[in-house]
Amino acid sequence: MKDVFLGMMNQWFNEFKQANLVTPPSPPPVVPPPTPLDVPNPVPVMVNRVFIDKIKKYGAEEFRGTINDDLSKAEYWILNTKRVFVELLCTPEDCLRCAVSSLKDEVYLWWDTLSMMISNDRVIWDFFHNKFKKKYDSRLFINQKEKEFLELKQGNWDIAEYEREFIQLSKYAHNIVSNEEEMCINFEDGLSDEIRMAVTALKLRELVELSERAQKVEEICKSKR
Image (cartoon, rainbow, N blue to C red; front, side, top):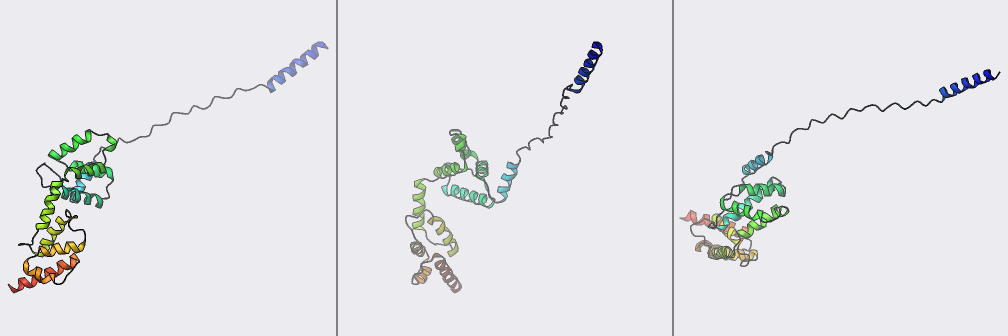
């Protein structure tokens, strides 16, 4: 009887053991490492060269400034360069890069030396623009242009040529002609005698209208010769 009982107990224990046997979790699947993306090599910086060629097609020019240059040459260059940048919607970074690429000879050495003396974060378009203007904006030059403005006469020019030179020089004479009326008075003073006598009596105080009337008088005078 005892042996039967022990046999039954042993059987129950084995059944219990089989029922409650904890199966160890299977190991997680091995995930293969991701395949590296085929990243293309960086494109060589040829965009800059293409862009520089593009601004030249729009009229940008090289600048070979020297100490002995007429400073109006520098003014023309910076104004023309800015015009091109505006037309092409250039970023400040593009403006600086392209402007510097246009500098040659002495003026390039000037900028190269200046840019090495300051931190990189200051080497921006506005800094270049301001320094360039200061370099070529001498009081002596301004005084000379004011004198040329006051002494300007029509001479052998036709009215259109005289007007173009008058307007160009007037940019340096803000202390002399502060409004359009004063501009007209100075414009009249420089006209040839017969044209001045014909238009002065009209007391025109808009430069565009004054120039148009002067050109009509000029045509009449030429037709009588």
